[in-house]
Amino acid sequence: MDQALVQIQPAQAAASLIQTANVPENLSTREPSGAGNPVAKHPASGEASAAAKTFYIETFGCQMNVHDSEKVAGALFAKGYRAVSTHEAADLILYNTCSIREKAAQKVFSRLGAFKKRYRESGKIIGVLGCVAQQEGERIFERAPQVSLVCGSASYSRISELIDRIERGEPRVTGLSLDTDQCFETEITRRDHPFRAYITIIEGCDKACAYCVVPMTRGPERSRPSANILDEARKLVDAGYTEIQLLGQTVNSYQDPSPTRLNFTGLLVQVAEIPGLRRLRFTTSHPSDFSPEIVRAIEAYPVLCNHIHLPVQCGSNRVLARMRRTYTREDYLQKIDCIRSSEREISVSTDIIVGFCGETAEDFEQTLQLLDLVEYDQVFSFKYSVRPKTSAGSMEDSVSEEEKGRRLLILQEKQRQIQLRRNQGRIGQRYEVLTESFQPKLHQATGRTASNQVVNFPGEAAWAGSYFTVRVTSAGPNSLVGMRADPV
Ligand code: SAH
Ligand code: SF4
Ligand code: F3S
Image 1 (cartoon, rainbow, N blue to C red):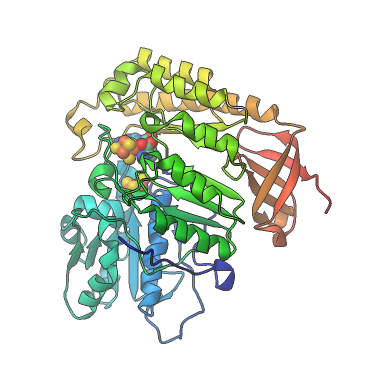
Image 2 (image 1 turned 90 degrees about the horizontal axis):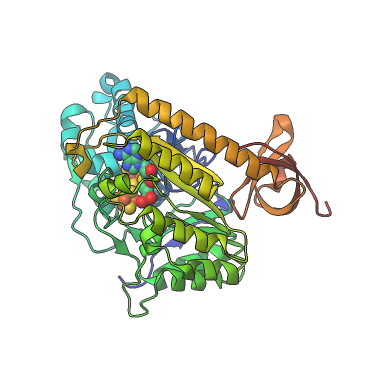
């Protein structure tokens, strides 16, 4: 693909289009704020004329989905559509779905079921996008006849054309091909977070973890040419964004397809060198492709945030092999050692699945021991959920729901204590905090450190988007409390 066509729409200049309060901070979906719960909606934008056609898009799942919705919104704005905040007010209703776990996948059908009768004859266009669309395909039409568009993420570059066909009277239109070697770039990406911008650098996944639907729902791995990414990043910084987050299901498997041939660290460094950028994040890293080069880059570039999300999934080699994770516990711990021996303190978070097929009490014990060894700053933990078409789908789901629930609680309680201890060790320290939100009732601002710790401190609404030095005064397991320590 040649030149990036991304036209940056600075969110400061327009009404915010996505409420990001619940947007998860890594690629994992999580309960209760992820895992099929809506993480982003497009509320009303007063920009287009009242006569314009209207759309409503609700997004479930990971940050890649959140950012995909921004790209789809951009394509719709370019067609003259206007965003509205309720499905009742919309001519076009889109659900951008997640199918990582069964509960997440069911969410869209309960949404669709809620207005089945009302909307069948209403002339509204209803579309299912994303991972459930890709996985279920045309079966969605049978289950929910009011749906006229089913489109997976690899076909979003055709979304405008697909909607045209429905508008011309075609009752059922699909975009389900995964046969693409390109990344999706719309002419306009409509970003909605005022100071953090996502950039997809790699789409799809070529790993084959036994439990996971992503290779089926997002297709084979495709990296974007580095020139397009750098061009987009420069435009974002020029438009006023100070934090950029590079996205990919296996972000560190990035391989520049253009003659520049940058690897992931090469790309990181080039983005980090863009003048004016203050924070650069990336997620999600796969342990097998994690190299010490990344740690060296974090040491050399203060703009690179000192946080790595490195999903381990399980602490037992037997289970890791059954999961087809391509690394052992020892390999993983070696990468952790490399991170921990850095001259810059780097925080580490992870994802863990409990109760995978055949996981014994002994296997689970090894996961608990791994938590003690690594001392993560955050763990996103999930009960194993059998997914259709995955290789584990044909294995016996041997751990009962009750036992999965029991293991999850034990793991979460252990991790809560680790986080509490680690956070209390931060009392008295000063951190640079990017202010993200404000709670008027409490007069409290909330922001994040570069290492991704949430910090609450007395503040004002106008501070959103500003950076302050905050001194930590107390700490809980999930967040820090502090006071501004710089001149006010
Ligand atoms: N690409 C990322 C993760 C993507 S999915 C990676 O490789 O780490 C986000 C998380 O959801 C995964 O890390 C895993 O912990 C969880 N997950 C994926 N499939 C699941 C399943 N079938 N049941 C339960 N959790 C699952
Ligand atoms: Fe799924 Fe594994 Fe790919 Fe992550 S690396 S998206 S868990 S198949
Ligand atoms: Fe869900 Fe698809 Fe993301 S399955 S986690 S929305 S890649």
